[in-house]
Image (cartoon, rainbow, N blue to C red):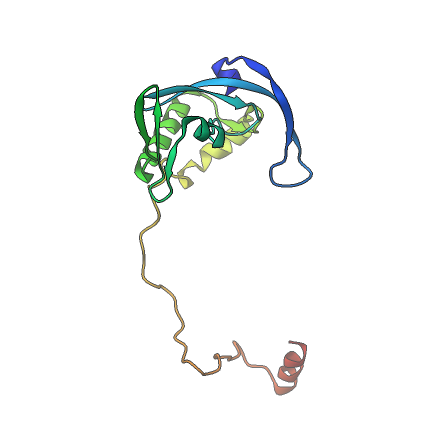
Length: 188
């Protein structure tokens, strides 16, 4: 994101090491960048540490919340704060709005790229023609748009009615002679 937006990196005044999910992977944070951003009518700049990530988001964390003296409502997930004498309320997107935004972004990505690409996290590689042909051959398997939300609630399609206090039904799927049955029970 830093490279795509043409932002100027500066040396971090206090470099530090960062570990994500395991003790083996360690990342050294040595650079910072000032990122201008807007959320609705709210426009601001924030100083961010530069970390290689597969996503392209600005994470407004505790330092931003402290600097802006934000009030967070944990139930509604609203953030309220004052910036340059004006009061702002940041409200999360609804699931429908998130779906519409993701669909719009996918359509823009499809129209801006003529060839299929696969993301490696560091750079994008063009797929070989054989792989692209295979994907196109089976494109009817994958829907263009994923329906919003969870699937509708359905009744129980398969069930076994059990009687409380009774042993589970344990009938053999096919008959075997008594000697084989005893050997099978011994092994199990």
